[in-house]
Image 1 (tube, rainbow, N blue to C red):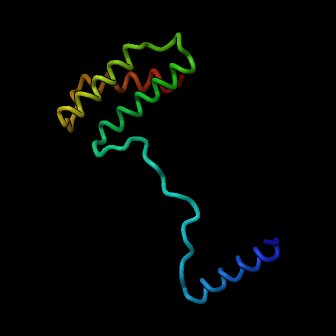
Image 2 (cartoon, rainbow, N blue to C red; image 1 turned 60 degrees about the vertical axis):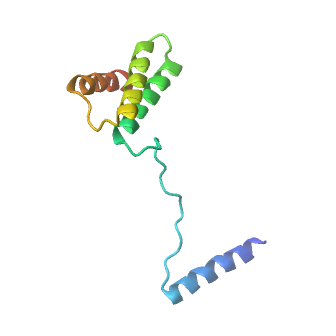
Length: 104
């Protein structure tokens, strides 16, 4: 198609939509979530694990493998036992990990 034809088609469809009082379709796709899960705790823990992985790829000597192992074991516990709340100690430890790996 030539540029003139595409311009004519675009203008014609806009005019038709105005005449019919219709809204145009979405211009961009909907946001995709990071974690494909129904449990929000698992999603947050997965984001923390991804953040630790990112830091490890960027600075391998600055990261601690035990942090990732701890987060992965916590994720498996939450999934296995269908937990809806974490203990205070676990939450505080996760918050500390977020602070540690946020700037890296």
